[in-house]
Length: 464
Image (cartoon, rainbow, N blue to C red; front, side, top):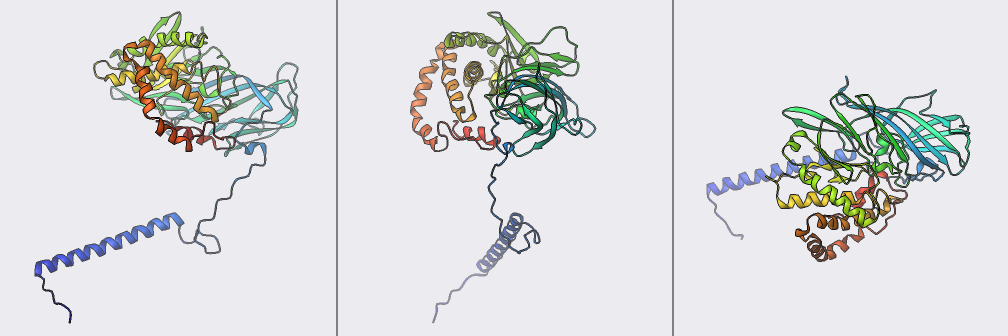
């Protein structure tokens, strides 16, 4: 005979409530699980005719045509670009911010081909007789007729199929007109917003690394495909336009044309349209300017960056034994910026916290960060911009070298910090964990056929 247990009325009621609560919880979890499973598998009737509810395996994509590959063929090489862009800083009737533009690229044919592949992403083209572009010959070169053109979304190409082959050694010009969205996605030519005394302000700015220049205009968007860029920005009165090189004289108020750049990669091209102010110096006859919100400059937050930029540039000129190759150095603090900074040649873009320093509010650590980031980006003016990686699989070397010499630049302007010794000690203590990331980041990982969006994602796995 089993044992008999007596419980009080209160305890019995408590157990009853507990049991009901448990039952309700189990039923709720079951319903949630069924909803999630239905969301994952799809609604009834969405399956194939076989009635199977399993998700079919993804078929690997096999490249067959030249435009199926993420790497450009080596048949063409760009020489010069002429790019005009007009960003609208107010939304249109559809409540969209847009930009319009036209560009021409002169390229030379290295290998006989009847195909032009040029990168383009999220651009709407003006059509010419059913084609996305016009082609003309340079000098004595006769341009073949365009047979057809089309866009490839997967590999982000504009494909131009010709009726006959281009001649080796001859140069040609491809002209396009287009429109794009000035989105707030922090990629390509995009918009950044901030509040100024309760009024929303819009900045048109850019971030081209790694493969976002193609979102601003059609281009051969690989780091080895260097060319000279002539940029013209059309903008509203009361705003200022910036780009990599200096402004030309005698232009209209709302049209700003810039001098042609040195030969450079697409990923370090930059343009900004804003209502910012600037402070400047002419250190060693080089125009140096710090751009930011006017209130931030009035509060003195750009002074430290201005004071250290000239000396750091002079240090690197001696260290590299090569003069700074541009006529000016602009650095701009953006309220909305994805990376800490970007080493655009002659127009370095920063997150505000990486360029501005408030001596009344910021800590010594903030000051060290500002000096270090500035030194890092200015190091790229030579190593990365003047001397450039062939392909993104060597990005680790580009960033690794700048991460090393940045401390030499800081040590030159702030010798009392002993930053080289302190960082060396810190780095040696973290070596085991650093080497532990090699399983994610081999020295030169294979990116020949990898999607363009994965380049920097893979690299960031190894950043501290």
